[in-house]
Image (cartoon, rainbow, N blue to C red; front, side, top):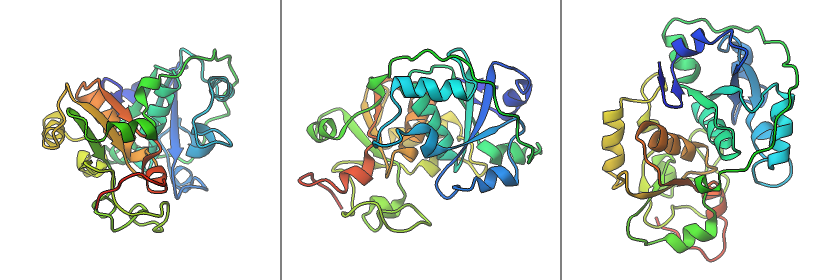
Amino acid sequence: MARGALVDPAWVHRHRNDPKVKLIEIAGMGQEEMQAYKAGHVPGAACWKWKEMLWDSHARDFPSPEEFARRCGAAGIGNDTTVVFYGEGVQFGIYAWWTFRYCGHSKVKVLDGARYRWAAEGRPLVTEEPPPAAPVEYRPVKRKEKMRIHRDRVLRALGTEGLVILDGRSPEEYRGERVGGPGGPDVGAVRYGRIPGAKHLYFEELLDANKAFKPESEIRALVESRGATPDTDVITYCRMSHRATVLYFMLTELLGYRKVRVYDGSWTEWGNLVGVPIER
């Protein structure tokens, strides 16, 4: 089944031999040696380290259109290739989806529940890696800047009527008790707290025990309880924007919201800026 950009394990299995579909696991933080991938991955999946493939090599930014095209072409991805991502952790697969959409690649999907739902359905995880893809041509395309918002515009927007800012971090980070994510070192910003007026919606609340998205009715209730409706302007953020993209995906792909932007600087930028307000 496909639900917009969200596909289930059966969809991936049906397309396992489709040359126009590329399945990619994203190795997130704590997966520098691609441990989870090497221990067992969805059959046919290649593996990318998130920062090497999704960030600029020098600036804290995304690849330029020309560099994005070069990386895609080298990975065997053309403009008409459907790319399906999943991640370890799951937010990194959705971050890759968001990055591809932002960089102008429209044919991109997310495997619901990543390896967790796949395994829960009794499907095998394998250690065999696919052969390297043959390079193809990729034509540079324009970024979709409307998906993103920068710090100065966030600052100007504070207190605007009809705006909801959603914080996808853990409760401890939202309360100002930590700046690092759960289970990791408490580093990343010099100040603790949240963007003033932000409503808390921890990304894990959207997922079930198999890391798949909960039913739409449950998700909609969670979102509307934070004051966000389809006609609301929404900004999502977290620590480095990985979890923020889960909120973006949920709002745009599952609920049909259209006025959503990711503040990708998130707390590692806001919590280090001079002269901006915080709330605790």
